[in-house]
Length: 81
Image 1 (cartoon, helix red, strand yellow):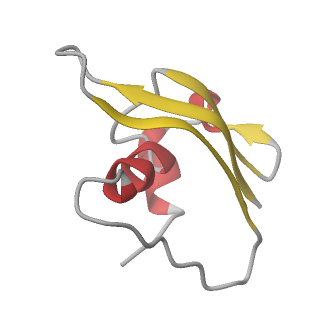
Image 2: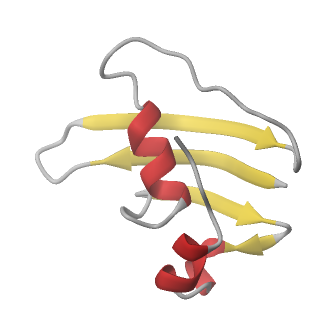
């Protein structure tokens, strides 16, 4: 299970890419993120694989906070299109 709780990404210039986003993605399921251009879809995926870190909130995979995981090993265990 991938769980995002109150996740926000704010860039240094003040731009808010994702604001207080929460969701649960169950294992062994296909999940689709839909939204208009600039709505934060790619930023959410980049936060899940630690290409960028959230400004606030938590992201867990199977109950483990991804902030405690090695980014390279984490990325090797995740795939998305």
